[in-house]
Amino acid sequence: MTDSAQTVPEPSPGRQLTTWLCGLVRARQYGQLADLRRPTAPTQARLTAANFAPSEETRQVFEQVAFLFARYHAGRLDPSQGWGDTGAALRRIGTGAGRGPANPGAVRLLDRVVASRRVPWRHLQHVIERARSCDTIPPSWADLTDDLAGWSHKGRPVQYRWARSFYTPTFIPEPSGTRPALAPIGDAQ
Image (tube, rainbow, N blue to C red; front, top):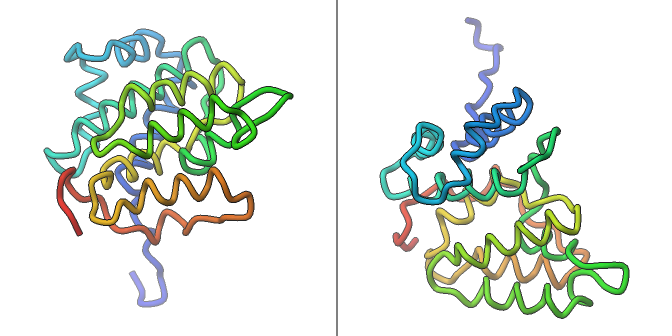
């Protein structure tokens, strides 16, 4: 290899998980996707998803994001890698009468999600179910994985960014490549 050859950075663990999950949808691996929708069963698919985690402390995040992905993709033929953070996804939720901040249900859901000190799995499932029922793009699964791994960071930057994405139409969050690396849940920076 010459000095001028550039190395391609390895994708983040969240991006690797997303690539694997999208591959399941493309290959029509309905059995594995159904196994991911079983929230507590230690199936091969769940354990494979957890193995993308860079640490033992983040395994649950990877399992649960795989669960949310499988819930969103139930019956879908084309995978969606998602786009934006969860605040942006909530901004897309609603009906013709109002989306995002103009939709009282979306506002209440955001309030419940960002107020939680622990990862609000049940409320996040509602976010994904609402995105699915409104036929809107879900949050970026890779970014969701990174965000949830950093949920308990000091200053609650994830929750603040999600609220900003929801309420500020011109807010553009920093690219995910510039976010801090995954840290175990519960570690403060």
